[in-house]
Image (cartoon, rainbow, N blue to C red; front, side, top):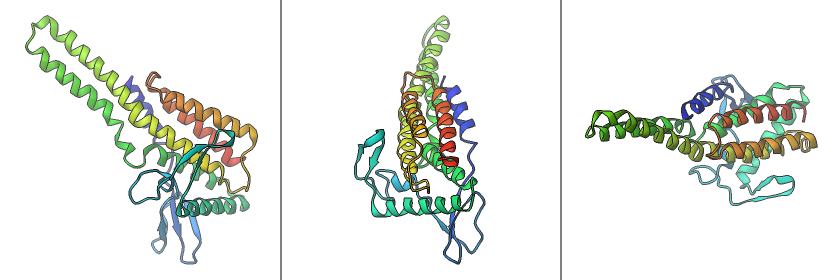
Length: 244
């Protein structure tokens, strides 16, 4: 089960291109999926680092509460608020120019950062290490037993390693990813560059996707469900970015 979840995560992580934030010599800010020119000033992406709580070197979220419509209202620092407002202006300009690609690229980049930023990219190795370590432990314990008990003992420890790996995958990867996705995408809903919230039907779909994502992060769920829910959320967010 854990290996199947890792395979789905690997496939999921390959779909979004890298996004570059930079400012040209005239002071104009750009968001592209190609590297900036040599004389450009490279900027840091506004989120999720700008809204990630408890990270050294980045502004810290003071508190979180549930607001109207089920949205989680984050109290942002002035730096965080400026970053989101700059993104809102950039998306407004792209929409005014008829650029439908930039909003989608921004959403994909944000989702990718939420999934794998700040060291989360290394956590899929935890289930593999869990299976390997417990398998070795079972093999070591079986050395002192008669041969007929070797296979059952090693097999039992391997199953225990799979169960522990599944728990580690959900607690230390899926649940943080779900929280970061919900926080940052709800902020993105408020900074679409349109001056208004998404249509009620799209808001309802997104809320359903957030709830399904939270449920999929439960340790009792199969490990492949969470990547599938992330993919469904990505498609729903893409629709919001294209036709808000």
